[in-house]
Length: 256
Length: 256
Image 1: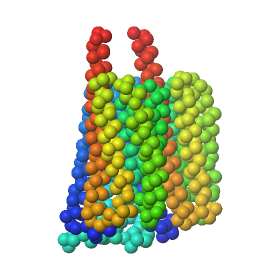
Image 2: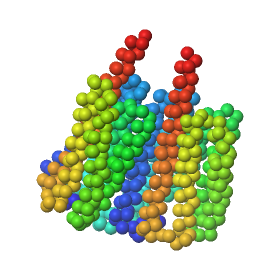
Image 3: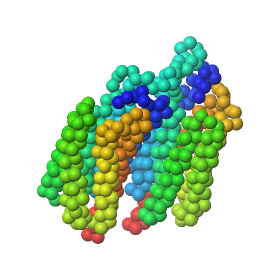
Image 4: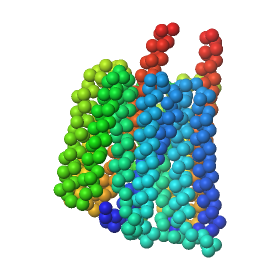
């Protein structure tokens, strides 16, 4: 990344974006874990994992922020590369862990049968890990050709996951209680919408989008997409868990 | 900010203010979260969020303190700028998260119907985020004209929020139990009072208030306003939750 194409304002704006990302993710984890005990026992696993996803992301935003700070010297009022490389791989390490987990939290909050849960989490989690692993060689490759090849390879599990979420989960969503159906659908489209950002941005260097403005759009865009796909998505998972817990409580009260 | 207009005493006083801010915010979070389980279940969400607001603020005071420390070298007995810029944007990043959340905690502790809660939190939270976003470009702009334009723009959602708090919430406050009505009113006026400080301070550079004394008044003033609007306001939210929890308990005892 050519850091020196950034103005001081752009460099600082990206840095503030990382700090914002860290704060949101860390606060989200605390929120999910503190509120976990208020839920019916069946939904505590899903919400605990929801908090793990944002906690792992918080850790990586801290690392990204430190790496970004070390990569440039701004004491002259301009962005001067120090030679210490900005480590973009942190994002991939993060996704390798968080993307399978966030699909798993969605399946868990639906509270399907044990067999269905194992089948769907293995399939979606595995495809998500494969998608990230295939994206990485293209990201670090120096030729546009390799970047494109790995983009295509990584789009295969991507399309598979989107298809599974939209078509494969249809029957399971249909069986969910009325008061959470809408929320589950929003959560699914939220994650798909946020994810669409990644393969588009991945192609930026191939179409000649480089320089300060492109780097700023890319880094801030990644941060926003991460917040939507992890923290905001998590709030939906939590709300689904709250509503389903209330339904359980009401049934118990009626039984008494 | 012209750091070199500060005396060593002023520089250290501001630094101590940040440290005080961090300590108050972090202690407040621990207090709210440790006491959460003592409340009736309906009020735990509001108090959890109250603790999140102060925790997010604590994180930003830590960052501000580090940035302040890096910006000046005082080993000669005078304040010498190191060239490392003092990052004022941390305050905006903080407010973008905490200001919507603290309005949300007020709505939640009132325990309105689900529909009213969603409506009010969306409206107030959205207006608060807009207010902060509109303030930022003026804060970082180098011309007084732009600073004034964004001050005016950001005052529109500000006035809307104050109007909503004073007039829009009147009916909902009227329906609150007698023993918390007074506390809710104090909490509302506390937040409005603390907030009035921000738009006034924002205009300081426009009216020529610069230099060491103005910077000290501004930074220490921001810290005090933050403590009032987050930690002290939070204590009121907590006390309201305690009183309402006792009312729930009494009703249950009567039923038995």
